[in-house]
Image (cartoon, rainbow, N blue to C red; front, top):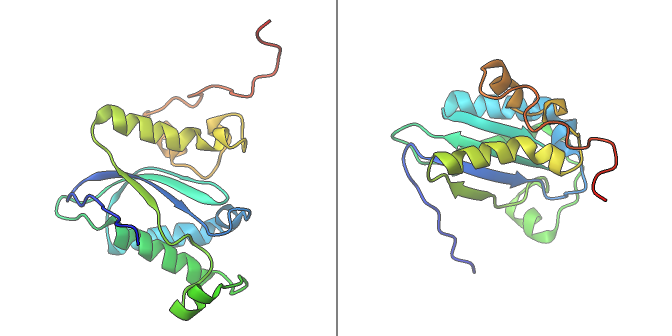
Length: 175
């Protein structure tokens, strides 16, 4: 069995990737209101700061900062996953392992986290969140993806609306 080691730094800042089990689905964007409710409930009951958040059809990227006396990001993700799952109809097929454990077949069991080390690491991970829909070919401009805290950051003056430009610019380039 793998020996997972996680850094638990009270008040730390982390980058996360959380994915659904069946990556062919558009589960998260098709049920964005349920995900927003689950995230909002978790924020109210276990506060933290969302530095960046982007929801793609089959996965989420986020940068969070926890309160100074708290390092339990796993609890927060568990609450989001549970509340979202409860809002979904029971249509997924379960393998034996999940059925025995009473789990749903919605989320991958684990998630990826990275402790943000400094300002440049922070900037890279926030930018990675925002460019990700473009990287996956969902849009050609960051501002065109609706499920992103990028829009909040534009309103706050943190990013210009045309940040990263139009990646899919038409034309012939090169020789």
